[in-house]
Amino acid sequence: MTVKEAAPEFWLYGYGQDHRGTPEAPGRVVTLIEKSYWEELTDHHDSAPEKVWGVAYRIIPEKVEEVKEYLDIREINGYTIHYTPFHPADGSASIKTLVYIGTPENEQFVGPQDPQQLAEHIFRSHGPSGPNKDYLLNLDQALNELSPKSGDHHIHDLAVRVRALEGTNGKPSSELDKEPSEEIERPSE
Image (tube, rainbow, N blue to C red; front, top):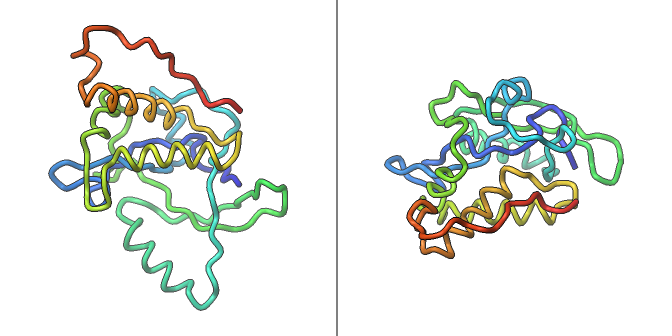
């Protein structure tokens, strides 16, 4: 199940004031960005095939307007609506889907950050929907369960860093006596 016209990796570039953070201490959330912008970033990771893995939901016709209205309120802040082909993992015909793509001009778009500092920020952030680290760790697990090919290096790297912070009671690596010895690896395909 892939979308091929968005950036090939998920990025934690948007911040969340309303779910995994607060206006005073915004969390970080996944933001799909257009591939053309992703290619201009200075720190993009090497990526597997140029596609984004995800799940498409079919909405029953009588609920489409209600669901779209809800999603527009939830997702439209800094996002644009795109209709793009969705390719089911089983190889069946593509499906026209609606996706919300982030815009770098949005004030909530953070852009590239140092991975360790980002992990520390995620570790500390908390909002009405719970800890930001839970969002990240659940996303990493979901991507790994979705398909063996769907692992995302950026998300997995951040998840490993946040788990390491959990093991040090949140102290950044700069405050520890020894260097971390764990090598960060991409999930096996």
